[in-house]
Image (tube, rainbow, N blue to C red; front, side):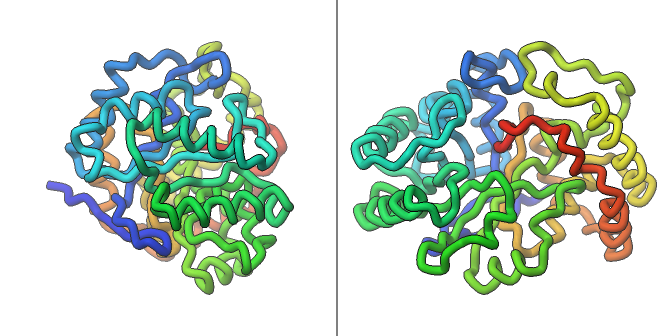
Length: 327
């Protein structure tokens, strides 16, 4: 029997499940959102409720995730006070940054509130800003005001690269930051970044834990993986997939278990990670992933060997589409 783990994030100390449901795939592929192909609204609603029934109370969404934001809103009405919703600000439906303008920002916040059918947003994240730019500073001041008014409970940033943390101005620091971290993307482990996270008590929401479903047994079993046209992974270079597969097989030899088990355990091994954002689509996946958190942690020598494998540079080959910044 597994037990759901919880933690508290942000200055507001919001209680969230250690695993957050990433809703990108639940929104289905649309003109502006190429995710994993068609996903019915009924199935998406069922997935959200099954997540809640299995102890997951934290849902990460965005207007860029197809219809996900509205589906989340429609689904959680009866349990609104028991769930935490995180959304994004400052981004258009086609993933481009929106320069700060008070009226535009107000309109976007109103749209989010309407979509989730609520009078407040738990966590509102500024999407992939140019850190410390005039736009970023104006947005953060705006978010501070929204928090004072009670429109949002907490605010944060979702960054395209964890390296951006190095450029954060201490006067415009946020207590929640979402960024990539997985078996083959270790940029956040830069000692200087970790020092800033610890000093400012920043809650890290880690995404791409399973790297868009690449870090799974299903991927490893198919040597010539072909993704459908409306699946965003169709744009991944074959050479990059080969490199990832090679690295994963080496890691699998070290840990001798399903690669998704290792992927989740690895990220969860680091205390600075508050919650792991994972796209899950059915009850069996919920139970499996929640159960992984309750299994024995990776051994120190296993983690050390995974870090050594990364020195072979399996991730940085500039073969990954630039627009894949979210979970």
